[in-house]
Length: 411
Image (cartoon, rainbow, N blue to C red; front, top):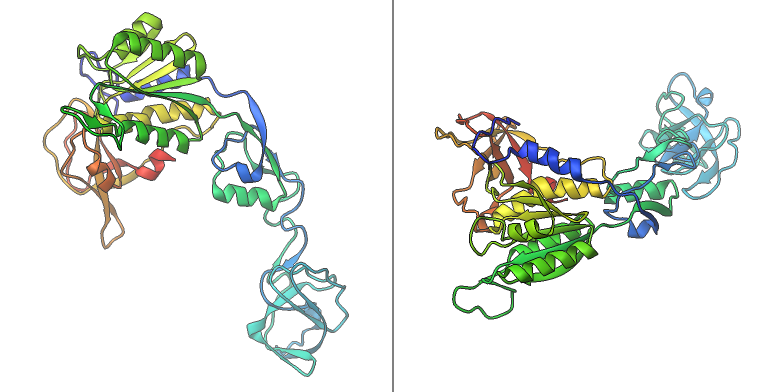
C-alpha cells in the first residue's frame, strides 16, 4: 500500500499498525485441550505425526488387485479370484496368478503391485477378465504418500480451522497444546446508547457497536469481559478503565475518543496511563486511540459503527492475533480492478464498502456502494468487502486496487 499520508497530526495506517504490533506481546501461557474443543484455537507447539498417512499401501479405487506380471501381453487376461478385501479388514498375501477383489481404502495384499479399476474388468465364473494393460503402482496409495511419520503436520501459531481438525484426527492427535485464550474487556461509551430490546427515549439510539465487537472478539476466540455501556461521565469512564485494566489482558472501547466535550476516553487515559497513538489518516476511522493503562493495552475505537468495524478489523484484529501467538497477522487482500472512475483525490486513505463482479473474461471488478456514511451498517451488510483507495490518488476504470473480503477481515 501507498504510505504517503500527509495530513498534519494524523498517523499513516501502516505506521500505526507497525506501532501497535511493536507493543503486542505474544502469548506464552498454554493449556492442553481435546481435539473436539480446538476449533479456532491457536497451536502453541508443532504437531508431529506419529504414523504414516496412509499407514499401509491401499487401493485408490474399487477394482482388482493383481501382480502386473500375471497379465497377458495382448491386454486380455482371466484370473481366478482368491479373496475379497474391504476397507477396515486385513488382507492375506495374494496367491500367484490370481486377483483379489478390492475396494477403495482397503489394504493392498502382499504380492500385488497394481489395482485395475473395475470399469476395465468383467467378473464371471469365480474369476475376473481384465481387458486392459496396466503398470506397476497404478491406483495404489503408498504408505506415507500423504504424510510421513515424523513430519510436521501443523506449525505452532496456526489458528485451527475445520480442515485442520480433520488433518489432526488423521494422525491420531486427540489432545493439543494451545495458547490460553486472552481476556478482553469490552466497553461502550455514550449517553445516547440503549441496548436492543429496551425502549428508546428522545435522542437515544440502539447500541450496535457492542454486539458487533463482542461477536468479532468471540470469533477470534477471545474471552470477553463485558463492562457494558458507560455514561458520558469522566469519573465513571475512569473507574471502568481502571477495573478493566486490572482484570483483562486488553481493553477494547468504542466511542469517546474524538475531541468533543463528552468524549472522555482520551482524558481518562491521560489520567491513568500513557497515550501511545491517536488519530489515523484513514477514512472512516480517524479517531482511534492506542494506550496503556499500567501494563494493559487499550485500543479505543471510534463511535461510528462502520468506523468501529473498519478500525477493529485493520488494527485491533492483527494486534489480538499477535497476542494470541499467531504467526499470520495481517488480512491478505485480493487485487481487483476498479469498476468505476474517481477524479477527486483525498488526503486520507479510504476503505470503501464495495461489491465484486466478475466479467466474461474472469476479471474481478469492485464497485463502491452509494451509501458510504460511517454511521450506518446497512451498506456494510450489502458489501462483499472493503476496497482500499490510496491517499492522494485518482482512480481510472480498470486500475488495480486492494480489496479485503469480509471473511478475510473477520475470521
